[in-house]
Amino acid sequence: MSDMSDTKPVDSLPANNGDDMPGNHASAGGKLVFIDIDGTLADDHHHVPQSAIDACRQAQRNGHLLFICTGRSLMKIEQGILDLGFDGVVSVAGARSDINGRTLFEHLISPEAIDAATAYFLAHDIRNYQWQGPDGMYVSRGYMQYLQAKGSAWKDPQFASRWHVIEDLDTHGQSLGASIRASKGSYFADRGNPTPFEDTCKALSPWFTTVSGTYGKISDNHGELLIPGVDKGTAVAQVARTLGYSISDTIALGDGGNDMAMILAAGTSVAMGNGIEEIKQAADMVTDSVEDDGFAHAFSRLGLI
Image (cartoon, rainbow, N blue to C red; front, top):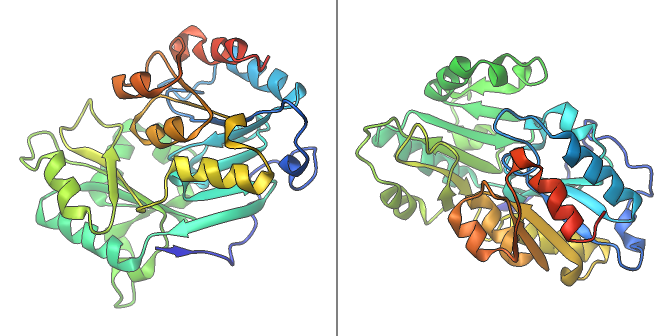
């Protein structure tokens, strides 16, 4: 694991109208809110309900800071979501944070870890995997075919130039890990692959913390590969500390496995009604589903709006 201290500013995140470090003078009573995208802010079709948009804007007018906190890399977030005007973004499951085009922190997977996981996937016939980093999304040919079948993500002009097929990369004689920069991996085995999730977790544990992924409808073994000691929870703590917020003044909203760390870390936590049972049991509050305006209902119950 290594920290990147020479990252370039990100120009895709719209600037907030406040100062470069808005939380350094947080108003009394202001909260720092961390919001997952998929299944929390947006539904399965990547649609953000108007009620959620209105709730975010009103909360900001009331003096609260809102951060996206997603498993996606920054360049994998739809521009339409960034254009909603969030105060900052935590991306790649807590490995990176940006405010107003400034990168607060970024952690990268070691080359050895990438090579170990890739070798494991090949040895166990796991054909669908990707690595996400600041330079793009690096996907296996199997994962590329999955994306092409879905259509939207692969063909979307915002993302088209950012996909790189691993088997087509010219690594100039180096290993894959030495040739790319990545902060998170994800994978899913084809249905019928005999390798269980628990075996994959154990085999990759020297290099990764593995949490369940979002491919449960198509795979029996699927997950996200996180840098050990780096997750959405550590990001909540680091952003709060940097911006001068007490952890008691942080709020997290999520629905899935990679949200557990921030649900446990935040001062107040909210599980979506469509979330997994473990998240609901761990959270301080369970709201309605994303389709039933659960996001806005949570903001109302929390007094943010």
